[in-house]
Structure formats: C-alpha cells, structure tokens
Image (tube, rainbow, N blue to C red; front, side):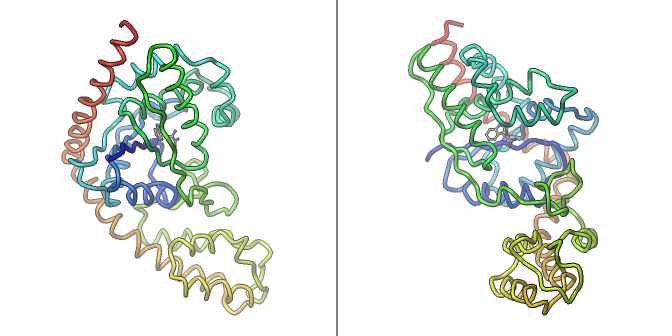
Length: 324
Ligand code: TRP
C-alpha cells in the first residue's frame, strides 16, 4: 500500500468547511492507503496564537478526527507534529538545500505576509519546508490537500529532488490528491469559511446554534423579498445543499428558488435539518472523546510512538548520506 500523509493545523475548532473540504475526503481515502494523520502544531505557531489555548485546540481537533470515522488508530496513526522531533530536524536539513527564491514565490507566504504584516516571521517563510519534512519523513507518496496547498506539494517535490541531487537518491517525490469541496464559503457568502472571520459553523456546534446561524446566513443578495425569484447558482446555501441534501431536495430548492415558490426560510430549514442530522454522529463521538482527555492523549501518544519509529529510520538514512 502506498503511504498517504496529511496534516491539519489546530488553529481553531474544526468547522463545516474543514469537514467538507478535508476531513470527509481524507476519511474516505484512508482505508486505501497506509495513512498517517498529523496535527501540525508547529505550523500553527507561525501566526499569532494564544499558548494557553493550543493544547485544547489540539485535543479538539484530535477528537473530531477520531469521531469522523478514520480507521482504528493502530492502522492509521494520528499524532501531534511536535511530539516527533525529527520533523524539525529534517526541516532544517531541507533549509540547507532550498534556494530562498523557491520559498519567496509561494503564494501562501505572500498572502499570509500581507495578512499578518506585523508578524512576518521566518517561520512563515520556511513553512513549506517543514511541510515537506512532514511528508518525506514517512516517505509519503500521496498527500490529500485542498487547491491552496498544491504549490506546497510541488515544492516538496523540488526539495526531494534537491536533496537527492546533492546527497544521493533517497526521497521519492510525493503527489497531491486535490480534494473536492475545498472552497466552502462562510455564512457571509463571500469569503472562505474560517474561524478567524467568524463566518463558520463548527462541527460540534449544537443544533439550535446551527439553525440560528443558518437563519442569518447570506443568500442570493438580489433576492430581497420572498416574492423575488432567486438564483441558486450564486447562493451559498445552495452550495451547502449540494453537500448535505438529497438530489430531490436539491431540485426542490433550486426550482423553488428560481420560481419564488419557496422562501429562503424554507430552503434553510431543510438544509439545517440535514446538516444537523449528518453532523450529529460526529458531534456526539467528538464530545465523548473531549470528555475523556486521558484516552485522547493515549491515542496521540500511541500515534507519536509509531511515527517516531518510522521517522527515526528515515533520519538514520539521512544522517548516513549527509555525513552527520
Ligand atoms: N499546510 C497545510 C495547510 O495549511 C497543513 C499541513 C502541514 C500539511 N503539513 C502538511 C498538509 C503535510 C499536508 C501534508 O492546510
């Protein structure tokens, strides 16, 4: 089986956008690969964050991962990046083979540098090298990611090549699997769903809160009155229907909207029911894990142990080649 590696930052409570754009797809792929899932806390440090909240965020993300139906942790390790020290070690070595120009052209760096103009730290700049280390440490062959990460996987290939050219053939070049639904808009209907924009619905959000949030969500802005016909193709609620509703319900929503046969209120009600129903089992399991932090930590320890052994083996090879 090929090795699949993926990582997610513990930057906030995982939301519906993360679920549709990443987790749900990863879980679907996991059983077909030798899969490893990583909570990348070191990457999360590259932007301003609250140290007192980080552990809780790591646990919450781990709980959602476990609740969303990954294969048992014995077959599919889930671990925290900083628990396996080899990640930073290999990242350093990659620093020494990568020209600055390769990192300077990364669009995520440019975007984040613009967003966090007061904190353009070098970690933000070398971020993709730590990501390359995450993958290559386990000789990861496939990496499921959203569209926005494709450039980083391409860079991981460049890094593998640079290392191999300098020290000898060792790393295989990883390939991305671009997951669908990776651009879910938030409740404002404008920007990508994100915790920092507050336009999100958390995976563990309670049903009443889901209803309230959807009631306030932006629809087709041209549809001002109930009697105005709407355009589902510009309505983010309809995009969400495509993920949560049956084909019949989607048809009902689309034609009802176009003909002003139904109002946004009716449309949102069906969406809310479906979303609540589909998130319920994940929410329930995640809350159960969160209530058992010791068990959660045990799973993460077990994951780190398994990954450490694999990482050390890779680093033995790297040390031999580099003369360390
Ligand atoms: N950079 C990724 C993101 O922001 C997270 C990540 C870190 C990752 N290391 C990785 C993804 C390794 C895939 C493989 O989404």
